[in-house]
Length: 454
Image (tube, rainbow, N blue to C red; front, side, top):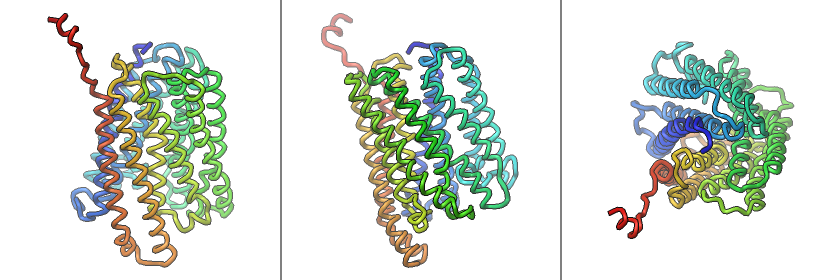
């Protein structure tokens, strides 16, 4: 670690990992409700469980991105973070907002209140006061890192990261617009949800991945930056109009069927480019970096993102197919693997790389960290296949034959049990990762050293 203010990232990573554990635990509870529907039905209904699960995911990923930025920008800009005090104030705002939102969800406080109550919009359920806090925290963050970059060295990595993070914050402003017309609401709602995860988050992902490849492979910066520009160009070209695949059935004009389908096909390209980029950098570098766990998480991130966001997204993105599959378990299969591959693995790769440096240790517990990758990735892959088969059966029974919804759900019971089992595997992998990253490996003292100490 070269700069003292990089330690800011330690606090962000700590809170992010805590929320990650909560998110997976709540997700496992949601999976259990699928097989035992009356579990906690009055104390914590399924809609509340799912809301906490998805919101915890979004917040911990954002905190991971913020922590990654506070870690890598000092090295890229070759100067300390502009204001450490503002960085910690931003973290406090996000923690308070997260706790306030969860308490509001769980106890259904201030029902229907425009400022204090839930908003009733998936992923954007946060009370208005929490949304305001998120904007304030984001503006503090953007001011802090922008001033740091402007006063220091400018690189392609910092430029792309800044563009991604500024766009992320600006697009969130659409969360405040909640028109009464449901079609119009969904039109702008996707400006946040889609243009985040299939647009500007890809810029953040590409820049963090480029930094990791630069550090882990030793490849020349010029080569890394050329790849980075190609990746972000394809991401923006495909992602912006690819939003149209969400407009198929919400009352938007019919041309969106063709625009959405065409550009959604190209959304596979940036993820394939990122996967190719990572493996070519490792091949060109031919360097045995001491932190092999971080390298495994980085490579795994690109592969799982390609299959989850690229292949599984393409699988049901054409409007002729989506007519039958939208809103089925196929959507859940795509969502789980794409989020895990593209953004969860990215944050875990960055934490696996940065944590030993932040704590002034050599890479430790690498075997356990790599084992946790295979357990989590294997569990999530099995969950994806399970939900894909469930969605295929559901599509045929419900959308083609026309069976009743609850009869179809009964028929999918075996798939839900398998999904729950894969969730247990993912949780075990999370616990292994937390142990590997947070607790140092016990040092083995040689006989000669112990004699000398005596």
